[in-house]
Image (cartoon, rainbow, N blue to C red):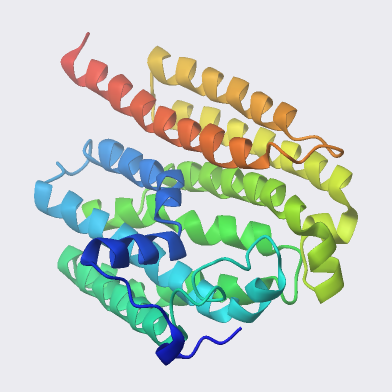
Amino acid sequence: MNTDAGNISTPGSLRERIVIYGRMIKFSHTIFALPFALAAVVLANRHTPASLYGISWILVAMIAARSAAMGFNRIVDAKIDAKNPRTSMREIPAGKLSQKSALIFETISALVFILAAAMLGHLCLVLSVPVLAVLCLYSYTKRFTWLAHLYLGFAISLAPLGTWIALTNSFYWPILLLSFALMTYITGFDILYACQDTRFDKREGLFSIPAQFGVKKALMAARSVHFISWGFLLWFGHAFDLGLIYFCTALLIGVLLIVEHRLVQPDDLTKIDLAFFNVNSTISVMLFLGILVDELTRIWKI
């Protein structure tokens, strides 16, 4: 597949360019982690009243960090993606976007993230480059460890903790429970998603839990990790003294996790996309709304 810049079809409008870059980084998947960061905003407001200024730069930082990490991932994995029938039509291997264009996009996104961090304070600025390094390292983990899913979860789980530090300029250990819930939540559904590439990963010598242990054991691992994630959500609610609305939300999330795992079976992986995007995006948004409404009822003493 020739990916020279001269052979890349040039989008005819700004809207088309935005769509291509958005597809490259799977912008719609931002919905998985962003609600967790917004949940941290709601709870941090107990300690330090959140301002529109701070929330705005947090949103910019979240979007920019994810864009930089995903752009880097697409560049690093371009040759692997080209070999995999499932990913061969991604923007770089399909010739819709050049490596150079992707690199420029990734670099700009990284700089915007650093700028946003600087606007949130000196401590955030100092931490911005190490955070970027952690996010980008994920792109290489599948080459040497089947714990890549856990590493991805860890990298994304920095969002609630980073949001808390940015808004309060302090550390408060209970927020780690939300980060751990996010880490295990992401780990679980990334294991599910990786089941699609079991044969390809084995053939190419790539590491994943499905490739290492088989699809059946991988699904069991995903269920176990999601059970742990649900446990962290309950502990988190207790640590922050959240009320009935939150715990009812947590119960519904537990039901959705069961539904997600009922959708994916070792001999039928056709519903992975439904479980991966629809169910997980619902869980993330539901969690944020549950925390927001619960907190509002506490403030308004309803």
